[in-house]
Image (cartoon, rainbow over all chains, first blue to last red; front, side):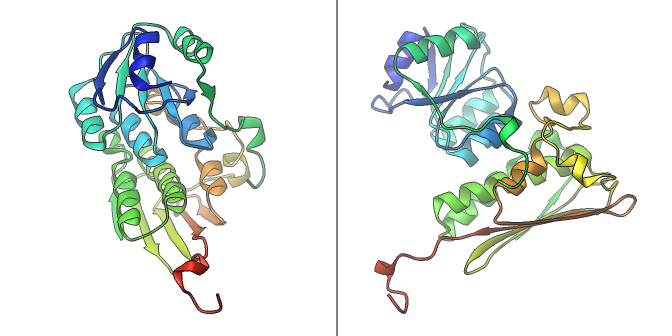
Length: 125
Length: 147
């Protein structure tokens, strides 16, 4: 699904990246626990989260996150907007809950990104 | 490359690692290795911020066949390394979990993203973690010998 279509489906606002109209969001991972995003995602993905601290964008930078989608009506703080702008990572916000946002994305063709479960992390990986 | 990390410096948490990833990429390290190295550095950096007594140091070097990352502090040291390496086990304070960290996955994730991982820790003395992330062999098209 293209970024603009995604924003329409989740009734979201594109704060950063509105010019990236052709950007494809086809994989997503959702978590507030950034530790899990870092440890469990196995490929490039969009991130659905309720966290708005600068670490969200630092994680996005390290993992090559396609787009960050803030849920539950979180307003992106200026520092986050500036960082997203600098990185060129699209930032979208929606008033919908994480559950509803994921449901809408999934039913519109966005797949889960390849990931591991915590229980698979024991032993050498 | 050497990066001092201050204990409790949440605001800048992850910024050294983001810089490390950008510098590795600029140095010609391939994107997959740079991503893995960035993850290892990030987890190490957050551990220094959340757990160390007085901060510590991240050291990164680019070797011909690997990226080497070393994370070192002067304490408090880890009493039971096996327990600390158990998924979900965490002694993180609330302020770290409020930020989305301290889920008990950090050391495991460092090992997962390393091809060789060593951890040495002594209570009262400190912890040293060494990670080697192998770089892929250059493709034959790039003209290395024996292609």
